[in-house]
Length: 287
Ligand code: PLP
Image (cartoon, rainbow, N blue to C red; front, side, top):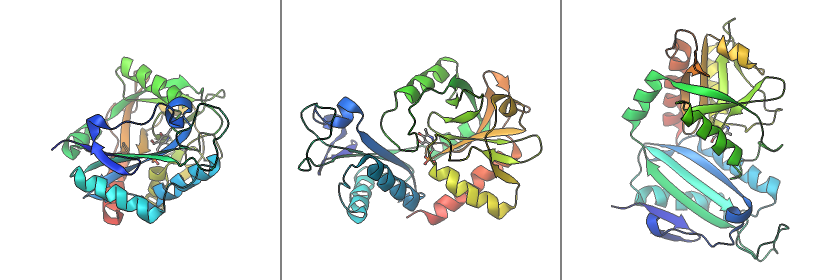
């Protein structure tokens, strides 16, 4: 069975799914998106991602395309039609289709909605996590509103390509003070030399990761020392452990930075344990 996408009110074969050339998402990156991990056919961290979607839309004054309930129904139908039990679901909302003009179109222009769903081989994903991944550092060069999850991902795409060319999986952005902000598609964490888990605070120009938020709750339950505090590249390179979080990565151990080993070059016990605990929680609370 082929994949099916949802585009503006219709389910269509994935290969034929298309938006208009004057969709503002396509021409101006005037669109936001969300990604949920799918576990047992249900949405992981469902509430957090819906809430962030609504916030992103609000910040950009893009109209809610439909009620949350209606959106959820369409998403569940997308999962059903694509037979996704384990995987990812992607939702994009653009300001709509209108003659090209930087300023917003009138209220009569409806937001445009695209939903795709894909299956993942969890065993393969777990094998990758068990090995850990490499990351590279790149200069932070994004706009000042990284808290809004927009499709304006060119700097992220360039950073990820740089990572790929270096044989790494993720790129970590570094600000002008030498502090890591976040990954191209993840939040960054360390277990520092004092045994404190640290991730950057959200007063900084970063995305307020939903996986990050849930993992903070998980960490609180374990009683492990934790601080929302930025760290330098040097601190990351000399940390006991490093990992990244996101709906795609979940909790993913990092074993090298710029080709330099983190710890002994293998996933550490804390990141490995947090991955297990996060997945257990996400699976148990998925809706
Ligand atoms: N930071 C960036 C730039 C991202 O693109 C993402 C996810 O795609 C994240 C962080 C992690 O966010 P979440 O845990 O909500 O998936």
